[in-house]
Image (tube, rainbow, N blue to C red):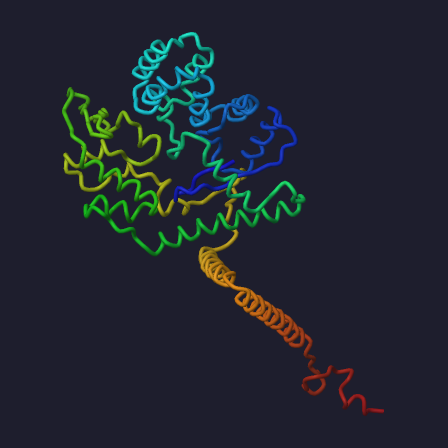
Length: 415
């Protein structure tokens, strides 16, 4: 099971060996996952259309939003549809799926395209339409998903781990290699933590809000925010309606020679602004449409309600507790982890340079062996010295060092 950290990096949350991919096996896996993961059930989970896993999720995670991988579904259009219909209407299906934010508008557009293509009785298309709440963005973007709509992070993770493991590994060898892969994955996170701890990202736009977010968000998430801020300068606002409770704006932008319009609503009583694109709800980054309204209203700093701790540099600063309420501490302090990360990176660079020649490999190998011997020698010598110090004997008879009372020369000479 994979997740996303505050740098937007893919991380492993848990893994398990299953002898069978049955509903019962998946239920067992999910129940074990809940035991070790704090915070209860996940808010959202993305999978392909595996029937056994779908049933298991509904049982083990009844409150979790189960989203189907949009990539797996859209990639089947070319296989499931007649060739001529796919060639002529695929672009229209794409626009309906990706470019429409409103549920009713999606339903209407889908039915128009299906009718034009003569596919109203197509069983696969009908089944996908019935499942639209689980994969179509217009229906699914109101759930936070860190911007994910497919399981492609899992595909990328498979490629990453294949660099370390293979089906020829024994169980013990697999565990060792898997742990090594996890340590390398964690190193990337530590490097990102280190950069954010000691550096502030440079701002393209010298605006107070941009500078504010650069100090709060991790570098990756700040860059996503800044892109929205830059794009907001190309948006145009038009007042649509206003009454005693709310104000509604149409926010338009030109994209790929087309004008796209989003609806931004400001509710007066709650002082809350939302957008039909649902980017804030889905990604956790405020969208360009709302930012355009903020600029018009001269709001210089981002209100706290639109800043997610999930993307902040301090996202991992809180306490994590197990099921019994006991604090779960990290395996190493931040200082040690930063040292480990720095030394690992340096060692990796040295090895890469040495691999350029046989002479370099031999020199590095001899140097490392020499350092290893010296380190072992220091440990042995240190242990001996400690043992000797512990073993120093004091004579109570005369206060001399090096012997005890029984071996005191004075006593030995006494008849």
